[in-house]
Image 1 (cartoon, rainbow, N blue to C red):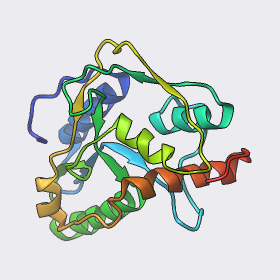
Image 2 (spheres, rainbow, N blue to C red):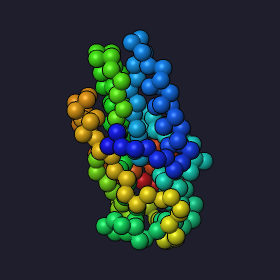
Image 3 (cartoon, one colour):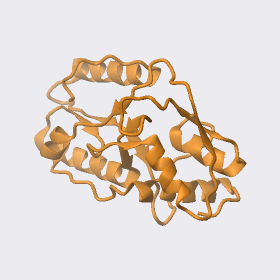
Image 4 (cartoon, one colour):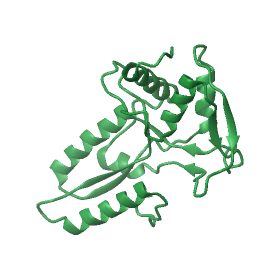
Length: 199
């Protein structure tokens, strides 16, 4: 939940925490904020007009895509997590839904002029192995994977509590299909990186 104690274990998480603390300090009657806590953003516009930029970022979807393009084995960190299939579980959210959240958050701020902090996800988790199995069902995709040791600090289960978000801006997801998210992002990556991959 948004009011749970914050104990960031990454530079990104620590930065987000510090920014929220700073926003609270400087907020007054003339300055209000709406902080959105992203979970795992995936996907691209179906017309391939926008999507994530850059393959050099060490992200889950980038590493998956590069494994498919290069034939290099994809590493899953740990198979003994306390989850249904032993692999980490994450809450993935489509970029279109995240954009809609931004828009509705701005409307809220303009109307109510109140500070808010909300989680951004679907409140539903998918395991890393589930994503891989979706890809393996695509006839044109070849992907090899193996398991390696869990990394220090790896979180086994990370799913958003979105009750506050739904209540605050009356938001409901429109693109919760995991298959749509991952395949749309890969089509986008192909279009902007000119990689020879059929999806």
